[in-house]
Image 1 (cartoon, one colour):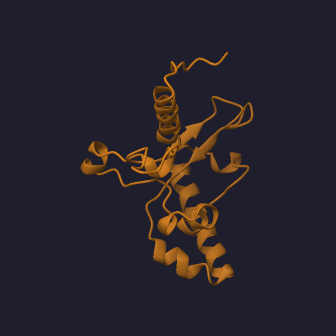
Image 2 (cartoon, rainbow, N blue to C red):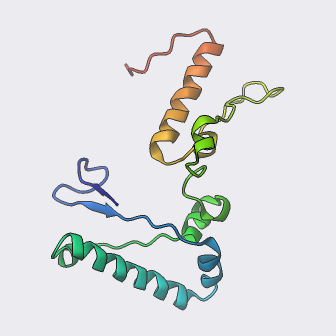
Length: 151
């Protein structure tokens, strides 16, 4: 569970976003999405159970909820085409933490790769780091000094 209220870019002043993530099965949602009514009902029931869980942690939060959005693996796939609705690049295994993906490909000049699939794990922070790393590589290749401070 993540709560966000420190920036107006994430939540309006005086409001908080509560994000609850669950592991779930791709096949279930992919098959269920064929029946829009059942799919929407399953999302509604998941939201209701999640709100009950939140209510047990934060009494009376139920009456303060203004917007509910349920994203399934199918939702992620529909918007990103990520394999099986993955919301992260790679699973956080011991091997993933110690491995890396090359940012340049041999034989392909002026190509640099950044983004969710170029890092172990995924999410916003690794993607931002990935972009910064590629800029550092570009600066090195062009013999320019890297400066992270914008002018």
